[in-house]
Image 1 (spheres, rainbow, N blue to C red):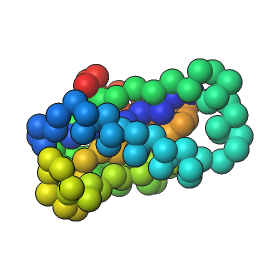
Image 2 (tube, helix red, strand yellow):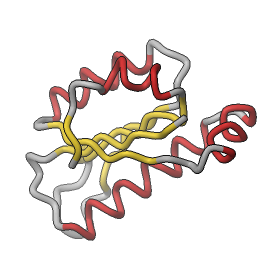
Image 3 (cartoon, one colour):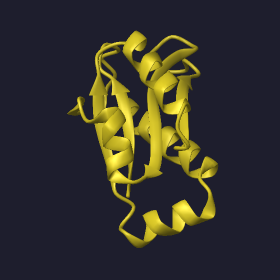
Image 4 (cartoon, rainbow, N blue to C red):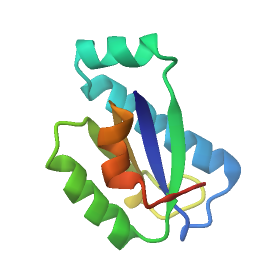
Length: 112
């Protein structure tokens, strides 16, 4: 079991901004997950992996694919108070879910 956060790299966000956006995605997905899924994930260490994606277009394509599964997912849109423009889509949270199920969707992406 794991959760994956897919972060846009074209935005050139600072480390703190990336961390904040990843936290938004993690919590948003957690809130959408059912209790059985959460129990399994929590029992296996709550693994989280952060991957990179080069553009908004590719992020949205991945989001469309994930929505066709039963995996919890959340597309994060920034309010624009600090480093980037309002309504900028920054990242996508996926899971928790089985490693195999998530890897089918994100296995081609590299670690951030």
